[in-house]
Length: 298
Ligand code: C5P
Image 1 (tube, rainbow, N blue to C red):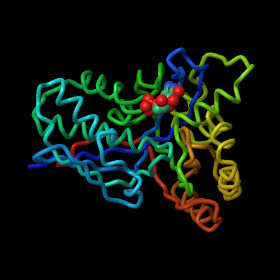
Image 2 (spheres, helix red, strand yellow):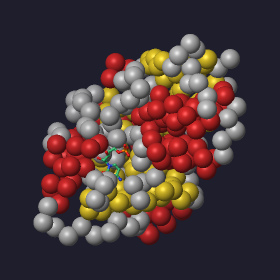
Image 3 (cartoon, rainbow, N blue to C red):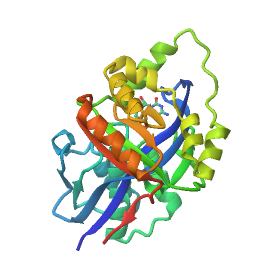
């Protein structure tokens, strides 16, 4: 017997970052959109906890207990007095260390899959609690759709979205560490007053209307200068996408994946082709959102 769960990637259409808190984290106003690029996590009974991974980036995925999928299984098992003797297999399509919540997706996927395999019967609230312990972006991977995250980004309010948004994602030649990008944000912010992070009313209206032009005018990412400072070549990728007619260009989360909003599937394909030919990135994918969060497939 096994359970397979599919979990989407995310793009942050707004990432407002406050000053560093005493615990080192930053208060955020984080508007997440789940997009149709997926990891699948399959869990089956085994002699002991082990992880395997397949996919283009599989070599970069840790297969020990630091993997968020393993930590999710251990957390659920610990709460319910269950022996976490399972094989977790990750079919990975979300870029690793890309700012698209790939690791968080695996954590949320493993949690839901183990819950089903073990018949734990945990409530959505308990699952979201465990997700928040695992990482700031993990609750959103479970929930999907679109949501505003405050606090570390883990306290979510679901958002209405009035249409489908078409995106192109350019994967970079190397990863960026999220803590390093936040540290660079702090360094760049030194001596400046950092305002409280708040969600943009204009952006929330654009999402609710499903209006791509209005969304393009409102997207923002406070981590973008820090990501560009650590990875200046990303500016060339952003320029290439802008030149190909993307409505908006931005670094996704802490990067280094870059995201391009397009009017429709056709113009997304055009932006994707131009980016592929530009030689400024490793690979290019198109995906639309919002899509559902972690979903049991079988
Ligand atoms: O919560 P998560 O483990 O995903 O966070 C990874 C790192 O990103 C944290 O250790 C911290 O350095 C940084 N971070 C932050 N403020 C947040 C979320 C993450 O500084 N709200």
